Amino acid sequence: MFIVGCMILFGIRSPLVVEVEETLLRLGKQIAAAVSVNDTPRMIDRRLVVDLADFEAPQGGRFIAIAFQPQRRGELVQQARDLGLELAEALVDPTAILPRSIRVGDGTFINAGVVIGGATAIGEAVLVNRSASLGHHVLLGDRVSIGPGAVLAGNIRVGEDSVIGAGAVIQPDVRIGSNVIVSAGAVVRKHVADGSLVAGNPGVAKPFRPRASALRMAGGE
Image 1 (cartoon, rainbow, N blue to C red):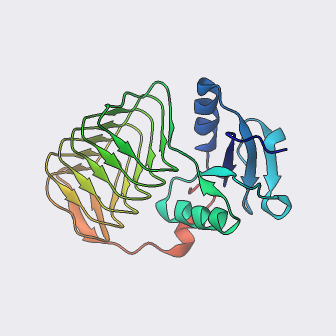
Image 2: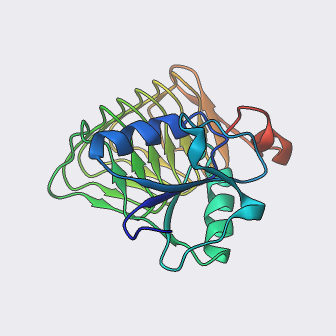
């Protein structure tokens, strides 16, 4: 029986699912179900796993979509909504430090050790991974992914479906477009146009169009 207030984990192929499990454990929250969407589950607690074909979506069920890649996370969100599920409120690890002035969209996951500055706004179904640091007046669009240890200085804008890789540094007042990939360890000092790949120090931007197959490689979520 579905218990109101329990979280449904939707899409559990990504290794990130164990981080979500740990955050829910630290918060003392329950998992109603972990839905495997045509993939191999990577749950710690396999007793909660149910295949999508066997899943009966409960009325009023709320979920979080789990995938690192924004495109994959967007697909999962749409699949879950098609089943009648609704995005859960943002899931924030109790070790994260958030300001009173923050605004966070539904379905967002803020992992352990994250520090966020004042007057920051985060969109829907965003991932801010462990130990990332966001400065004041940062704006993250829907489905943005921030990698572990990334540093975003003050007054930064990141467009929807963009990825900031692990350990990347975005300097103050920079605008990152939509569908951008900033590689791990890159240092970005200038504005970045939509659909770019940025790598190096200083970061150099090049046009980028991801292959659909690249989003479905084993472990690539």
